[in-house]
Every structure is written in C-alpha cells, then in structure tokens.
Image (tube, rainbow, N blue to C red; front, top):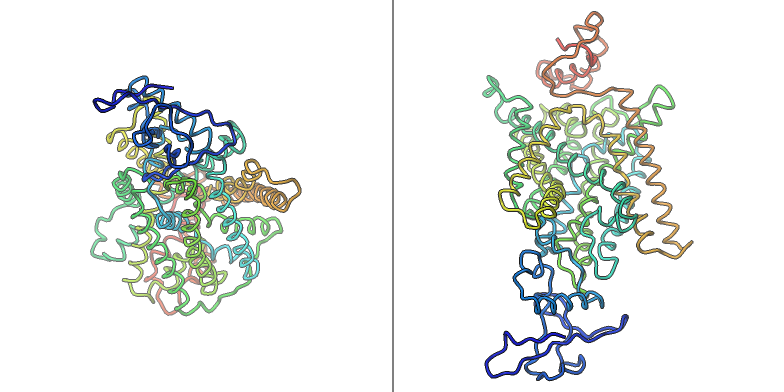
Length: 593
C-alpha cells in the first residue's frame, strides 16, 4: 500500500491506493478504457468495496496507459518518482497475473514491426497479398510441364489448402498463451520447441526467406528494368546502354529510398500497390498467352527423362516449384503483431478476415496462371516461366505497349515486395542495437542499417551469380516454415488430446512436410550435380580446356533454337532470344565467342 498525496488538490486529504490480493483463478471485474485496454473497475461500479478512507467520487485508479510497457520503458521510467514507480510496477504485475494486461517487451515499442499497432483487416489483406503473390507464381506452368494436367492440378490444390490450414494455425497461435503475444516466427518456434532448438530450426529458413527473397527481387527487378528500357527506348538508346549489373544498382537504390519508411504499418500503401500490380501482371500474363495462337508442335504429355532417377527428381523439382509458389508464412505473425488486441477484440479476428480475402485473390491468380500457361504452351514452356514464353513466342504478335506495361508492373511489384520481406531483417538489426544501448535507434542509425542491408543484398546478388542454381536446395530447406513447423507448433503449444483427430492430422502433415523437405533438398542437390552451377553476369571467362571448347553451337542446338520462334518471322528479328539461348549452350569452362 502506497500513499499518494503529491497530486492532490489543496485542502484535500491524501488518498491511499490499495491493491487487493485477488486469489489466482478469481476474475476481477474490468472496464474497457478509450485506449482499448482493460483495467479494473473503479470502486462504486459494481467492482467491490471502495478503498479505505477514500470517497467514491474522488477515488483514483491508475489507467492502463500509465502502467503500459511504453510508459515504463527504460527512457521514461527513470523520471517517475520512486514511490509512484513502485505502485505502478506492482499494479502492472498484478494485472498481468490475473490476465488483464498482455505482457509486452518494452523494447517492442522501439522496433519497426511492433512500433505501430494500429493495423486492421485491410492492412492485413494488403500485406498478405503483397507477400503471397510474386515471381514464383510465374513458374507454375513449368511444374505442370513435368506433372501433366491431372497430377499438376491435384498437387496445386492440395498445396493451396495445406498452406491455408497452416496459416490459420499461425494466426491462432499468435495469442495462444494468455497474456503473451508471439510477434515473430522465431519467438513462436522457441515457445513450441524450446529456446535453443527453436532458434536452430527457425532462424536460418526465416532469414533466407527474407534476405534471400530480397536478393532475388533485386536480380529480377534489375533485369526487368533493363527489358522495359529496351522495349520503350528501342534502337534510339542502343549506343551506350547500361549493363545488367548497373541496372541492379539502379533498382537497389530505389529499394533503399523506399525502405526509409519507419515501420511495417507505414508501408501498407506500398503493399497495396504491390498487391494491385501483382494481380494485374499475373492476369495479363495468362490472358495474353491464352488469347494468342498456340504453337503447332504443342504437347501436353509430361516431359520425358532418360532414366527413372531423372524422372523422379524432375517430379520432385516440379513439386518444389508448387510449394515455393506459396510464400509469406514467415511474415504472418509479424503482420498480426501490428494490430491492437484486447480480450473482447483479439487480433486474430481482423487478421484472419484479411487473410481469407487475400488468399482468395491469390487463388484467383495462381490457378489461372498454371492452367492458362500450360494450355497455351504445353511442354514447350521455357524454364524461365510464362513471361519468358510470352516473350519468346509472341514478342512480335503483342503490341510493345502491352509488353512494356507488363514489365513495368513487375518492377513495381518487386519494389513493394522488397520492403515487406526486408522488414524482419531491419527489425533484427534494430533489436540488436536497442538491446545493447537500451535506447531506440535514431533516424540516422535506422537509415544506416537499411542502406547497409540494401547494398549487402546487391553485393550478394552480383558476387554469387550461381545463387539461382541453389534455389531448389534452399527451397527444400525452407519448406517446413510453411508446411511442417506450424503443425508441430500446434501440438507443442495447444497439446491436443492424444489420438484425437487434431493430433493425428497435425502429426501426419508435419511428418509429410518434413519428408518432402528432405526429398526436395535431395532434388536440388541432384539438379546442381546434373546441370552445374549456372553463372550469370560474370565479366571474366573461365577456361580450363580451351582445346576442346567449341567455337559455334552445334547444328542440333541451332534447330532446337528455331523451334521457339514462329516460322513466319525471320530469325534476325529474334536475335536477343537467340543470343540468350546460345550462351546457355556453351560449356561452363569454355569461353563464349
């Protein structure tokens, strides 16, 4: 019991503030304050007897804003007087004990993911759409070329509903423990698997899904900017064009400028732009493909392989493409952390409402891309996906304005996706800084972190040009984040009854997801061994045995190249495509003439 008299008006007696000893398990009547948080009812409103010696009309009760983690943050709590501070700290602990105040880390008020908690269902839909639709969706027709119609549709449908179920699990587990919010994927993994094992299992795949995707977006965005410039400018700008690496640098600078927005809620507008552009260019890609005449030699039979082992690994690679098309689960908890939460209005309600709308739109994009792309090109689909097929088969049949618009939309989507996928990395940088200095990042420190991260991503993309060849292996290693770990987390935290339906379902999906992860990782290793590491954008030449290196592509290769062009067009009009395919046909250890 503490005495409060410093703030009393003249002529009034000092008032006493008491904290009743409520037994565990006994609920305390509460009211909802204008800030959305709960506090005990003031005496005289049905909440028990008033404090001793206090008038009910004059009684004073600390508001939740005064006992919130932000108020008691290290930079402010030192300014509060010692007696008052003890009262507020004790009251905060009491409210946490009976479950009326969520335990929050005071450091969360300084970090970009949890700095702003005014999100809503609309923001959740924007973020999930921006994170869920990307360049991986354009590769779905490639998977159908290996699986065929039946198995392709079955695999895509199962993967869609599987990942939707695991997303529902993550949304529910965000506040599974009363008085605790798991704001990050690694935090939930630690709660489910233990402190050390959770970090080992979840840290690498989540970091790769954030930083690796950001690096891939720089490469794709830079190359698409170059194509857009070539289509719009044409022969007028062919005298001294920028190299591919220079376009990467231009795209990286644009990403760094946009990354100066402070927190996850502040990029909701960018996520909306990214969602609109992704839906638009995905729709344009399959509509333009279906509206054009199909190649005469098209076939819908799965691509044949020379051996049973090669066929098996090709199927695994196709399943990996389908699994990798569903991304964004590593950001689900972070998106939900931006929303306010009370006992009456928990955060999982608007989060799930926004996620349902987002994934309905995602399904309306992914399924038409896979079906329309495979119908238009069959097993002639290039390895680069539906946009490469559109450019290879119909670059002279489609107006340049439509092609340029499609490429520009891809650039906008890559810029927007870079921001949301980089936010967990920014959060980690600032968490390390604030934990060491015990103060929030200044605007210069925050900007420095983001500039550093942008150029590190650019350097990795340029210095490791074979990174795309590791996509199958790394995709297999990160697959459990979406399909397996959430099922095990549900078992570890919710603890369903043994041998119940929920117990069997989650154990089965988790084990199958881990098995697929190992199989897809093996398929990625086989792909690297079979095709080697394909180097991109290297300015030097590796020559090991120049005597046996060819100086021209073989005649068979030239004929294969010409099958990718309509017969009515002269080969000279397809020189960019011809040059790209020609470079891929030379051995890795030979110079390209």
